[in-house]
Length: 386
Ligand SMILES: Cc1cc2nc3c(=O)[nH]c(=O)nc-3n(C[C@H](O)[C@H](O)[C@H](O)COP(=O)(O)OP(=O)(O)OC[C@H]3O[C@@H](n4cnc5c(N)ncnc54)[C@H](O)[C@@H]3O)c2cc1C
Image (tube, rainbow, N blue to C red; front, side, top):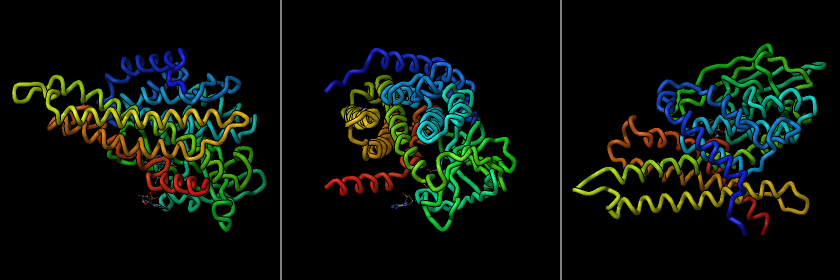
């Protein structure tokens, strides 16, 4: 067993760390306050190869392994979780299904520019009546000749106001339940496509989460991803990979909160000494670090298994990504709670970074499958294996 990173992985980690420190950190408070989506920072991250890290060179990416991708997301989330959300969706939830199920023509049209960061992707599954229950979506797609007509509403679409392509799941055969779902690559210029209201959120306020309205939206049959009825399989496979990115976001954000907390504990004085000298504070910091490290190991193992599963003779990743996502997303909420506690009243003030981190962390146990759904996946997997 080897716990070390390759030189190339370390280079990626350090390059992204330096970039976010110089170009993101100084602006986070302002972006968060104004709800600004930092497309200019994303463009620069794209130049570093961060918008299509997992894509092979043939499709415009650097063809990196999942550990490298995880290190990138961790470093971004350590400073700005909302930016990590945008990168995670475009890198994995949209590009991995395109790579696995797309035709060569679709890969030329969408995957290459996505991997180069020329535009972002959005993943559109959730609807007002259906979140966890993905098979319950109601957006309808009906075919006539070479066109599908999509009618319905999606909600909570990350990157939804700024994407160049939308991976949309719709019912082509409502009587077939989950087997009647089909995936489509929708372009924002298609007639009948409209961006609706923006969600007014607790945290991650500079990552847009929007409603999308499909009013008889005309989608050429050539933009169908995979076969009719394959949509749920495509969505679930995208979420499997996506969970690793979300676990990485949790670990990165928690690390950022620990960095802030340790630095503050050394400088804040009470009763004539720094609060870092109180055992109560030391124990909080020790628990934070231990839990972060436990989550990081689950995360790296899931990333390792994901890369191995594509090799002949290796077993599938199974529920490893769900275990990493479940533990990391709950861990980050415990860590940010302690961070605010260590900061005292300043932790409750918009002046401190940990106040934002506290709000940003809350959603991580909800999106890309709630903790309850992760536990269901893990239990199903372990019971099937007995
Ligand atoms: C900031 C943000 C960004 C998002 N980005 C996207 C995106 O880009 N694309 C997208 O498609 N969606 C996105 N989502 C939606 C997200 O994936 C859903 O919110 C999530 O899947 C949960 O669905 P729901 O909110 O409808 O909750 P519900 O499914 O209504 O669940 C409500 C509660 O019931 C529990 N529950 C439901 N079913 C079960 C069950 N079988 N067993 C036990 N408990 C259960 C849930 O765990 C939860 O606690 C985003 C959400 C947020 C908040």
